[in-house]
Length: 573
Ligand code: ARG
Image (cartoon, rainbow, N blue to C red; front, top):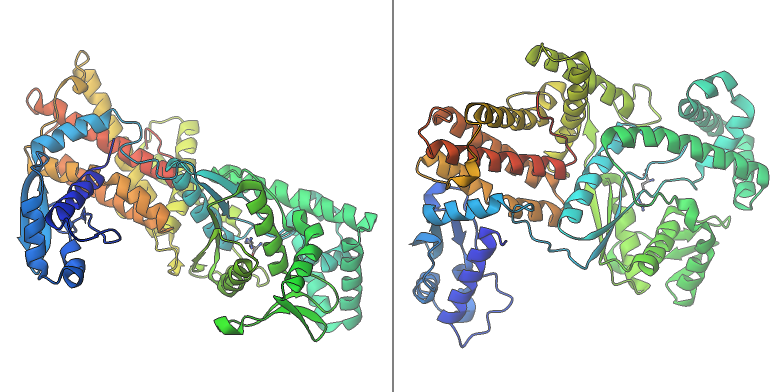
């Protein structure tokens, strides 16, 4: 079924075309959007303002003409002309009620399959081998996974690719560190931590010791040339790291279609540089192969170093080429922190010059701050993602113990897991990705604010209303009674429920999961005032059933929305 916004937009489109049949209106936005204030009705259309110039008329007259030309529409109670030419639309309650009844039978809650037949490659998480995933990686994993879920739900074929950093210059230092400083006991206890220690120690020694640096470079060259011993070590590092990453993905409920590290493309790098050369895109400069991007006011990009080594950008060019050949995607989306903006600007510019016409999108996010801790790997005082998740679960457990003391300890732990992990994810997803997020436990776990526990709790409360209803009225099925929207709170809630499809689409297409989070929070608040202001089980026959149906619709919407953000919704909290 179509969303109300789409239905009204189509209706408005036809009205404008009927009012001005002689003018080509294609390309002008003629649709409606949900209003932000009730005083303006439920939906509004601002198209008249944008048409003033082409039609050489006052916006108010244009809007008036469209209203006059509009076909009668039983879904609409009234249409007002406001201000300089806004068209404000108020829905008819009867029609809205019928719509909600149909919505209740729709698994997709009216979310269209806009992505049908299209393919998106999503490159996210992508941590570096031999370095533990620290909290800075959480945003890429969590935001990327939410986008992944949103696009899949919209019908896109999504290829989630974890582009591991497994072929960088760190391996020279690491192999050297491994040969000189290895503590076999520590390696057995926690391989990734030991690898990181080896790397840091080797890195520090290299700062002061030129011979050490030369040796590290020699080890790297050996690895790149396929030296069996170094290759075996490299492989071992990769496997150990991946096993560690997998544990975190399992806890976060994240899975990938592909885990292709940078190393996967290593044999194609020479070909990329050659092609850039042949096309005159790369030129030799001081012994290196460089693509100049002065015309775009971007610094030059080195695709092959003086020593013959290739760079991050070269690998990414080979990766784009390979993804296009294999998946023919409509879009490739990269989710990383803000520090990589220049890299992707250069990369996209070069890819385009090489003939890539696929839409390339860099979704960048600000760094997350935890008061009292930093996230850089090289500084001490690092809070690991794993530790953060452990703490989240522990803190959630004390909340659950308090709210549900009679529950079994296993059940409490299971719910605390969903609440704790959900809280960490939501704290991130509910923020504009490009803002600096300051993470605090108080906010993340607040039961009365814009947090996962608040929304999860709302779902659980609705579930318990549903259960109570079932116990008291075992032989009634609310679906047999019509929905009524008589109380203003019922109407308010209904108007919000039907806006779900647009929240999903905007969150996906603007790459902003927070758009969906904001919607869910707003819906939960509308539900909460509904719940507090109108009687449910004590209401008269039929009214009671209608209200239970509204509860069920709210619950389905909240659960689906949270699920699209990758957040679980336990039945009880
Ligand atoms: N491994 C990189 C890092 O941790 C992120 C890779 C992002 N993806 C890409 N195709 N460049 O900084």
